[in-house]
Image (cartoon, rainbow, N blue to C red; front, side, top):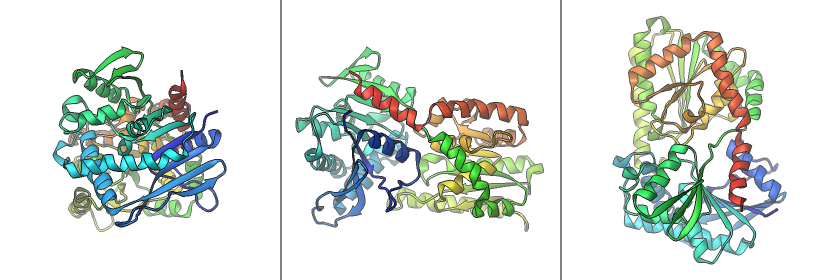
Length: 458
């Protein structure tokens, strides 16, 4: 069996005990790498200042080698904060108003991908299978091909892929699409993303669709497919069952004093629809006075990319909005919104999901959104909660038992919250079972196996 080489912006390195940090993607990739043997390469998250980064830092656990490299301050600013997160991220999330294109940042993005290719090249063997992850690394295959490598190289995009009219606003869109054509398999989260990609190529007159996922473009024939990423469903369900004995979860249950819990968990990002969600919760409370004093909304929102001005501003906006709503509708013995601005461990999170009668997952745009899948997996089969899910999340293509909402429709989302809290047990069980059966069959290992099977197919 060929070795597997995984390349991603950041690498999940096991701790001193050899255990990888919890997380579905880390679990799946570690298992795939462990089965085949191989290398996981990426940025260490550290800067070398203005000095050239030292040699790769190599750590071996079992038959997996973790290869980390530092980047210079300029690299981090131009490649990561600049082009990746202030051009590609907003455009892929349909936020043209937030895209700030600069030629210097674009050049840095391609330069750092060349740097990664140069550092990876000496470790590659002729029959290695290379799997590249996410928008930070789109040009990597082109750099490796230019160096003469003919390996099977696959790419998976974890975020949405926009339609042509959105993508074409990016000055270097053709170069980005040319980079994707250098892969053997380009994977997306949903059929809609794949259709946007293939349709954009055809519309631009630079590709021909050959059927069966095959695309001819820029002098190459490659394949496109969609592979909805998932979670380690059974393990996460077990987390949630055992979390009842967790001291923090017990204290949380006591502190809500028998009220119904509504939960939202999101990285702090403008794509997550947090401000619209708080507006919808306020509308729900004002329209349903019977639920006042009887419900608590817990919003867990760890900080994200604080170095980017848009994120720093959003952090202030969300905190102020939660404070305004609490000030307007709370009482001496009731604070409706609890806003937590830090990370919570996954076992504790699983216990909080299981306590919640409604899970609010309402991004304005999301590639998949694994919180939705975690919430479903964490539920008590005898008394499951209700998932309120944005139709603009990739997960909406799979989780047919959710209450789908338009997050821009504040009134509609408020109505869905009320419906979820008042839904009869039998309907909740039927909706949950439909989603859970799907997630047990289509877990993260199935996602990993399906992608690698197609990548290595003749």
